[in-house]
Image 1 (tube, rainbow, N blue to C red):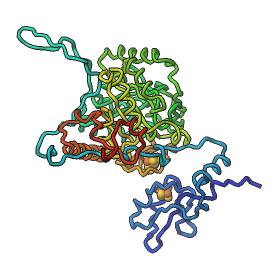
Image 2 (cartoon, protein in one colour):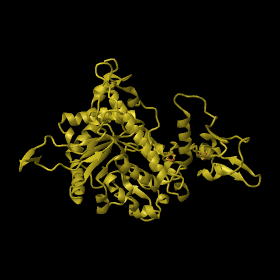
Image 3 (tube, rainbow, N blue to C red):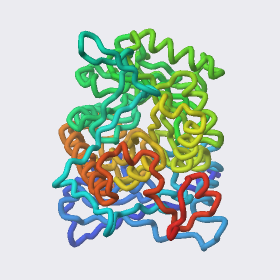
Image 4 (cartoon, protein in one colour):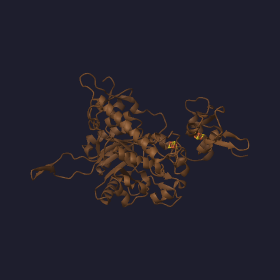
Length: 507
Ligand code: SF4
Ligand code: SF4
């Protein structure tokens, strides 16, 4: 008797076809990369295979007569506070296959979201708000080390700085695009991100997959990444961008490496990553040359040396228990910016247990790191870039008030280009043409569309940030940095408020 596959008995989604609207155009069959719609040529009708549906909503959105509705499957297990359907189905899947549960995107569990427990201030009566439509409002900020004091000298009656300042990144908005590699996402999305970064006066990040030849022209808005796999890393690549990010960890999967399956390594990706076509791209968990802060310092200065001290070097870590002490070591090792990626940070592929249960929320991490660096008198030597769970402009404002200099957004940028959070990026079959390299899927998202959506999103958020600053009576983003007085907590414990350094509402 064949072993029953229990997981295949219980679909997550139910494909409902409204037969009075369906014209049997077979568009759904073409659109679904998971083959959940089937054309029965003999009976000349359409069938559904509910178990294959991942809930991406592509067919529902594209159906010309709106004849499809995707619902959660009505067959639910009996309620149980401990053994929810999610846990039961996961046990079935692992009992069927004996493998690690894979997923994508960021933590899906309902942990407390601290951004939702923080409210912003607004001016009333004595300290009037500022209207950003009528008065200047500055979102410009600079990433990199700032001198403790400026030394000025007079030469021939003119004043000038005694020492040359280190390079800084000028941002016209405190929002940058997080590392997402070519391979994990399509070249079209990278092209859209790069062009949007250029037009918005900000930066996108290559991720660990190298830099495609067509993107070198956006170098002055590019941050190149140096991860443990060292894919596509050569001196032209390092010199192509304005900053180099050493990736030590990632919020969605702290403590483990990455894996781009061989089937995703196409000709173009193999050229960019400098690995053979069809070979698995495995990034080890550690950098094999970093086992101490001194080793990290060695790599930071090797990268600075290789680029003649013209590039900033960032170090990216996952937010974990001892994040403040780790960040302090990183700053002392010479990093120009510390990137902290929180528990809710997204990914193209991660074991579910890592995505959902390892790491700490970004809000607590930002505050803890900012506080520690201030206490040690080294806050000016670095910038804090926060990422992992930034969903709207208010989250950006709150992150900056907690002590970040700027934020990275990843998932929000993907949602802007159509992602429906189906959490199946690791399959390489993204129905929206985002997390895929399949030619027939990539063309669903042209680079111009990606550009327009991403550009619009950041433009809208930047406008909202200006409005919020104005409401608080602040006319520059610099004045918001670490300004926790503009925040109040609602429903947080004393301990949580102490870590965040925020008073409770009413105080
Ligand atoms: S996987 Fe997506 S395209 Fe396929 S049936 Fe489900 S919602 Fe429709
Ligand atoms: S990028 Fe694509 S595959 Fe990944 S979650 Fe979004 S829609 Fe799904």
